Length: 510
View 1 (cartoon, one colour):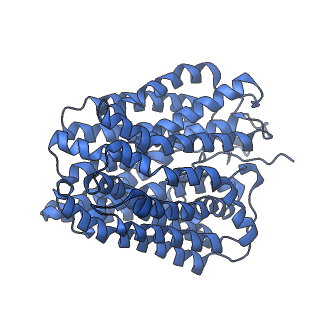
View 2 (cartoon, one colour):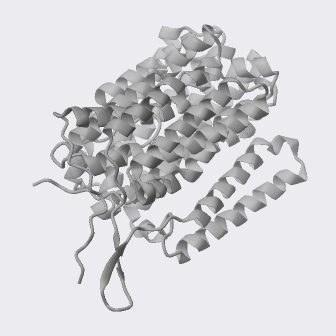
View 3 (tube, helix red, strand yellow):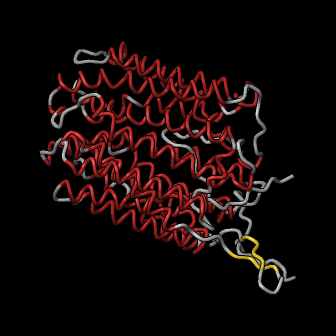
């Protein structure tokens, strides 16, 4: 019997040491540029449409091309980091993201912009899993929870400021600078990562050799599964976005999406190293949490996409004012999310995950008061405060319940699946919601037409939150759940749950 080789030889970093602080800074900067890519663009959409004389489908694809590749490839990106080195893949992702951001900023036409946004998502899928996996692999167990909490908090601040900074840039030098914004911090990450961040690879798995000796191997990565998953998402997104055209190719895309999804499930069930082992869904609580995630992130994703447009097109706000208008929601999340995680320990998962979505849905219904003559303090602010309170009650408990639904060995995989579910939910909402409410290709050019569609969309978004609440009330346990100590504070993300490395090992320091 040979001794087990150590694949992760990086030192145990401490936050008190300079190298530990530099490593944390690099991971925060890396994850922040991806979050900015998700949040900064919405306030720029009307100007993009005007400059390119584009219809609503172009605005949808500007958002969804990014989300499509990010959602479809994020688990594969984590597996690549585990195999080839988390720092190496992280740096590659940062460089890729910076190059794609530059291409977005100089795009001469909408087709180039959409293609560049898709490339941005690929870069995000490479660097996002590595940012937290580096912390998990490099920091001493005593400092790991605090490092994760700091990573989450500072990343949340960056994401929350995205609409505000994006609005300032759109009203100032122009919408192209919302893409140039991420280039400098991305490029700054590279030399800092190469100088300060230790390299690490994934934990090995035992494998029986022919001669009866035990050897170790790194888990493989499921390229076929990733390709089929991304293809299914791409075809579904195309079918929903272009359904107004009614051409046969749209029906073909819808059928192709179903077939690709079926093939994906077959590959994942039979594969040696599946990207998403279907056995993980044998946990009723894990399955319920992911259904809740699909509901609530579809509702909130559609809400934020349409609200940024409603405030500019109908109410008449500038891009900066629209971004600033949504800051109260951000402030509430940043102040209280980490504290709301204790609700699960005191009340059990059912109560906060039933109450939170219902409060969010109420805030969305209050947005029906927002129209051409809306007052910010009378109409917009109360709705966003109510919605922010609901998200405070909902988001962190959702994360805690997720991590409590599986054992520590599978926590990274569970978190990755849940993160992908949240992104897919937002992707489908942005693609399908305008179709469901009858929003025409030129609806965003007419304040009256867009306001009517927005009034139809808010009950649908709220209905998704209510559906999530019903799932929570029906399927989640009433009693408290035991949480894994090694995760530290819950992650108070604004638009998505945290992502842990697929094969990260979480150890509790006793």
